[in-house]
Image (cartoon, rainbow, N blue to C red; front, side, top):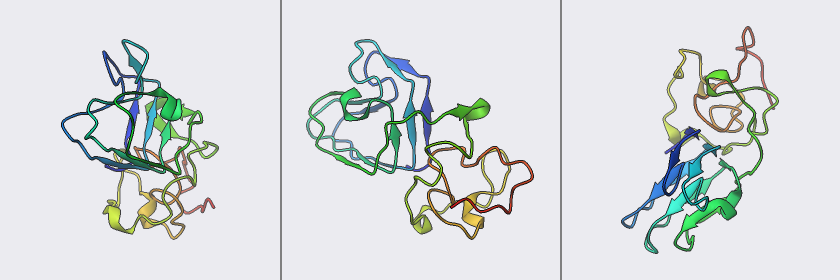
Length: 154
């Protein structure tokens, strides 16, 4: 799964993301932030069983591994931030976000569409391909960039 923004959710366990029954999901270029779990452990991610092995690449996860709950984490956790993404209204990432240029350097296998959720051109159509969709981590895959469609952020 790529370019997810999982924010402001709550549940008894794993307020943001929950893995169970030998789940082996792969998350890349995603934000998991400001989620709440009933027991405070696993407020961002909950791994139910020892057979689940989630993988996180180039994500921004609040609290890092310390805010994972459940079984011992034995998955992959690479190039992942624990810094406020400064999301704007509509879950947009502004150009000054720590998530800008923080995504995976190669997005060629992600099948990124030409237009994002808001109908704006995605970064896959840009020549600057740093990070997810050309410069960011997270969905909906664009900065608040009115009039800057051809601007390169490197």
